[in-house]
Image (cartoon, rainbow, N blue to C red; front, top):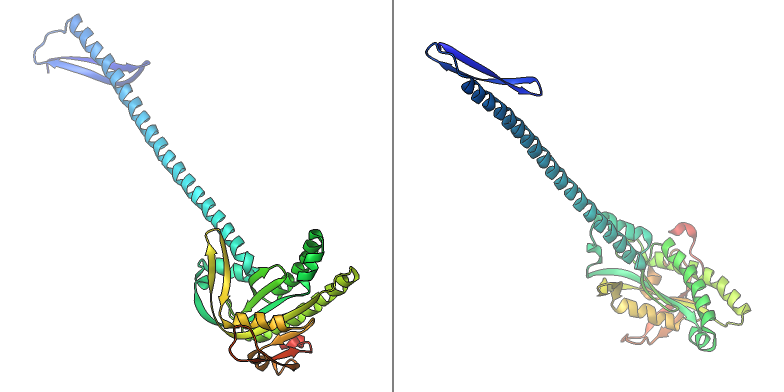
Length: 308
């Protein structure tokens, strides 16, 4: 190189580089050549700045896109979480309609409702209702009927939860409760009798109050033990837990035969509680839907509290 020309590349008086040309002979560069290289240097500065700005813009765009994806993913996760939580609330609400709170909590905690699928199980079924309720409802104002049912349901509902029973049926004054499903019970017959004795005492207090109001009502209970097919029945938006089998029918028929204040139990139930409760035979009954007459027993003494 015999002749050299360097033109600075300036950005707002800041040197960011230079453009240089040279010759292999000694000869000065003309003013036009210097001007041309100077223009090249200025254009190069603009091109470099544009490239830098474009790079920053691309980087920020990528960051914004990434952030938008993260926000969208977060929103999707949040939306799914809300859907799941709403689903759990609805599921818990459905379960609590026919299960005691501790049973509903157990099923929700397990994350599956497999316990509610159709299956065969040995259970104790209890059916109870009010004696004389039909006549009372026909001759009384609807407001009086509803007020009485509220007191009645409140009393037995608390007792059902207390003893961990599964509410199978709740229609008017008739209530069906089962034991040993979906949660196992060591002695379901005893648990049912314990609850029945507690119910009899609680409703006995209400009956005195109702009589003071002029309502002649009684309370009867029937309890049977045997196998049944259990599971949810119904349709989307309205499902119940049901026990299908002879044991449910026997409990209902025994309840029909029970006089006010009686707790009629089947022979199998009596056998399970004979060491902790006093019963008396009340005779054989030809129960509707049952081939042979069945001996029934009335629980006459309260079961000791420490027998549970």
